[in-house]
Length: 92
Length: 279
Image (cartoon, rainbow over the protein chains, first blue to last red):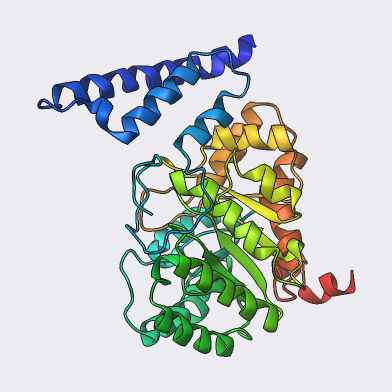
């Protein structure tokens, strides 16, 4: 454990600081609209809750939080690019 | 250490990248046909691309001693146009006997639409008809889990399909188990922002073992690192893994998969298609 901590702590500390900076940046740019209303932020907050939990499979849980859990194909192409998180409100 | 780059979109890369990859130990590159960042509007445009993959890139790679192989298809991002898909599929067979053509790929899903699934199944049928191997792209980010499940569900509907001749690429932690338990080869693609980092790829090899897992950079026209595989090798060494284990996923597994094509060989290393066929 000590070796893994030694090898990987600083880069992961940096990642947490970057997330904090991103959230502050979002708040500063919100111009009256709460970032919490965006489906991506909802997914991110759920993922952060898993990070702070004792779940032994944090990575698996977080991958599924961001994923589309359905298997029904879209009838028409909505966009070519993925958004990074599934939007449950999107029309199929 | 020698390695095989299993997924490099070299049409998007410079000759300097070929040089750097060769100096880092890359002895062969498998290049799937993919989306150019914009939609091609005609089958002629695809045919030009297929000529680039089968004529120009092997020549460029050979200049630095790299064996270049390729896969042909119309990729899922362009498969909404069913008429164009049909026309491109009609033109693919004349390229399949080319010396560097490994099979059909990278086919698969992008946003998992009805037309993408139809185009995917058309390509699988073509591969089976012409006894070709298959390389499969799985979608990005939130679409990966769904796309991988739908891909496997459709593959299993094709009688005669041999999972060991199919590689399902861009696997991540939430999809690799499903791919491996169905008997397919898989690929971990190392991207700076999306997909898998070298550290997570090493975690996955530690968790699942090395069987049927390959590693690649999937370098293309977007943010990507042509020498990502050596980064993975370094990560594995930092953790104290053996050279034999590293070689297994960056060279032995890709070689084992590619030799099934009957065309892949590395004469400089004494690996010939004829010798592989005798085994």
